[in-house]
Amino acid sequence: MNNKKNENIAVGRGCSFNEDPETHELKAESVDGCHKLHTYNWTENLENGQNHIFEIRFKNTRKGFYENVNNLSLKRGDIVAVESSPGHDIGIVSLTGDMVGRQMRTVNFDSNKFEFKKIYRKAKPYDIEKWQESIALEHSTMIRSRQITSSLGLDMKIGDVEYQGDRIKAIFYYIADTRIDFRALIKFLADEFKIRVEMKQIGARQEAGRIGGIGGCGRELCCSTWVTNFVSVTTNAARHQEILLNPQKLAGQCGKLKCCLNFEVDSYIDARKNFPKLYQPLETSDATYYLVKSDIFKREMSFSSEPNSMVNLITIPVDRAREVMFLNKKGVKPEQLSNVVEEKALPDYRNVIGDDSITRFDKKAKPKAKRKPKFKAKDDSLNPRQERPEKNGDNKKLPQRPRRPIKENVTPAVEKHPIREKPLRGRMPRQKPQKTDSKPSVNVPNADKKVAVDGVNKARPNRPNDRKRREVNNNIKPKNGDAKDKVEPKAQPKPQHKSHPRPPKKVVNKQE
Image 1: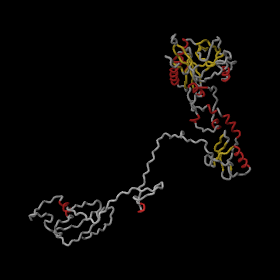
Image 2: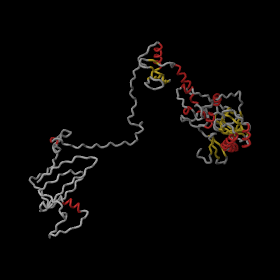
Image 3: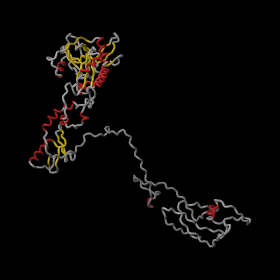
Image 4: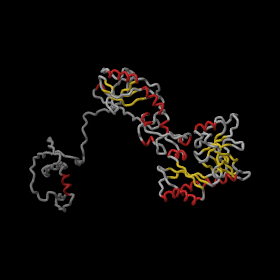
């Protein structure tokens, strides 16, 4: 049905509008699904005779029971024209057969007090076309009516608008906490839309049922699927079930307490009749225990050694609690609150595969490879060149590396040219001046000038690098000359760091 062209679905009515390809006339068909206050007819295929009463549904939760006076052959899903005041309305057959009588008893419909309205005929293309036009006007009418109510200053909210099938009358559903005089509002709405106006007040729960939605349980709202009678819900229903009084969790989409709080209250009240009423804490020789919580269906009561806390929590059955209360009335204090030794039960299920783990798809860090410790030979007996015991117990000789022969009585080669010593890095030790036989000369003129081969002194100008050359040349041994010609200056120690002064090391120079 969704594959047809020119198809328009009316969600509030639960039907679809499409064009017949042969006659090119507009027709409407019922759409299967979960409608508001939907009822499954499980006796539809049984031959129980044709009943003359049918259930007809309209927009959202509005339904009615109508009589088939013309003996039309109707089935579930047929679109019919029914009696209304004034004019006629268009609806869809939702229930037939014996299930209609059951549904009338469910909604407390008394046929003796109310007269059944008539079913005129099956809807014609002209009726369906006019019905579709009226459905298209409902949303814009609701928005305009809200603007009119705000301009009049009325404390009310218009939640929904439903047009009649012949577009003569419209029903305006509104919500208000107090009684409102809307006579002026009806005049404005009648002049604005040129229709007959009917105002109907509904509650917050009925509005949520008409709009629909999904509840906190994940299912459709009960008020829009099967609940017809709304019973008042109080916080006592939550107290009997020991539910935390959190307004955000207890309230539904209508802003009121959830209707489902009343579903299980009776079973909780019946189960609590067998529980003892504790007016005082239980006394034992160990401590005083206060009631914290009770599990009604397991018939267990939990006590704590401190009030309003979960410290030293002990859970005992109801019979044991009644026994301790009887002993305390006699003035006897038992040794322990629980007379059963708890045994730790082994888990029946073990997750071997790890399917329940949340982090089973996370990448695990690879273990680092362990470094092999280096072999250190402390004794000669554990020389790495010697034989080592193997792990398997077999001793295997390792191939020994040939040693280089040591040459004996070999004099080192004499250096032909002097080698300049590289300056030491870091701190230099303080050295004592070497003792020489020759006396140093004082204030020798032209001492830093070189003597030429022909005996003539040639002076040269001082240069910035001459001082460095002199310091280096002073440490060079003389060539075939007398030691008296050159004066060895005193070695100046390198200045030490001020923040960490250390005593100088004594260096003894052996004389040749």
